Length: 338
Ligand code: KG4
Ligand code: ZN
Image (tube, rainbow, N blue to C red):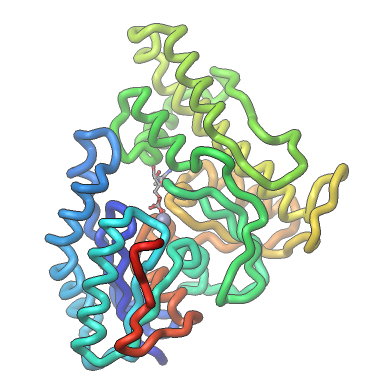
């Protein structure tokens, strides 16, 4: 087996993990959510500073949890892009230093390949080909995965990501940050049909998404109600918004799985297996609805554990198994262009 230590610092979680083949030996996640909550969203400068403070203890905890030392590793890996530049720099510099000190090769991993690769981990790893819906705070896309080393973007959001829309909606409703889990909790006691929010892009035969119009509709609904009634109807607003986000994801996932619509067949045809990734894939309603869809359409479904949907370093180590690591001194060729 191959022992890999991976670091992930692209956003507001400081993460390190040790993976042995497809088995997770340790997976440490230090969330900075509390530090950003008072600003209502992620402040890049604050994220970088926290990563700097947390990265060494998190790496130590990952090594200790896996009961390994640097010298035992076969290679290291780190998220190289996309993400907040200052946050990425902390992970990349730390990984470069550790790899150089240990004399080990280092792989630079695409964060979204990481979300796809969470599906290659135990328990129940799946193999390509499969269709993967990635919905996170920064990205929303449908990935065609025919080879573990890469993925093809079949469609993506033209404006906000699904998670970003949920975060902004939560802010409008005074539910705090991170918004996705807060909306999900609030929605439990609400009626998803209470507000008729628009289902965007569904008449568009392509596989792209759009969430900014939905966000504006919520803003108008809140304004029309006024502060007091909006607070009274908060659960209904949250439930309606969550349902609208999930509905759009479902429509496009179904279309991609079928290989297009009656009006337009998509190149590449349909899929027999479906997987999810990204923080929004931790959402209970989305998981439930995707499971129903797969049941109806006779598709095989892989649902990774919720903690492997949101950002973590085990998924980066998993992707690194299929990337070519670079030996010292050429580590990554990472520069300030990304
Ligand atoms: O993948 P992730 O941890 O970081 C990025 O790569 O962006 O995704 C974070 C996003 C946030 O927008 C957060 O609100 C959303 O995932 N999220 C959820 C849930 N948990 C996290 N959205 C809906 N329901 C959840 N349970
Ligand atoms: Zn992510």
